[in-house]
Length: 137
Image 1 (cartoon, one colour):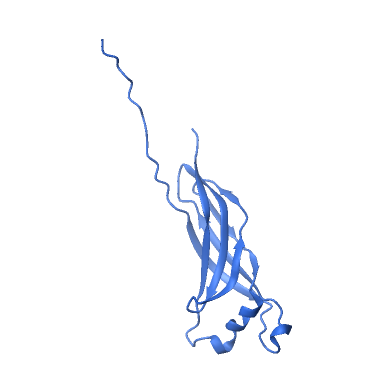
Image 2 (tube, one colour):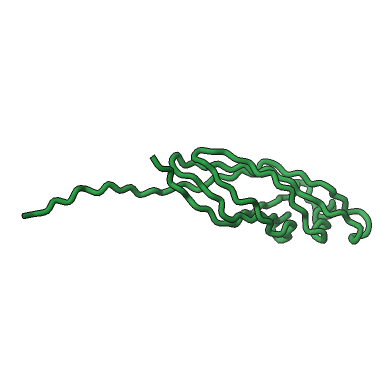
């Protein structure tokens, strides 16, 4: 006799990565005139929206550090700063709006002497680990 095995249903899930959009940035306490030891610590506040594009998969942001470079990318102005761990449902949009201090010495690189007439670029970097969680029926 031949045994008959029932077919096994399986699916391969290929979750999509979250999408991040850097919306805007504001710098507070920015004053580079006078003695560098008298400088207030500038603070950067930015709005970063992110979306889980998956229909049946949740995303858990285990660890995520944000840091920033200024100009041509050679001057790091924000040291890696941890963002709070968070959970994002399927097709959900979220926004982070952290306030992060600028490395005091590096605030000098933000003054008028280092600006180009066409503006300068602030490059925001995110490094971390995320997990995908399949929604149950």
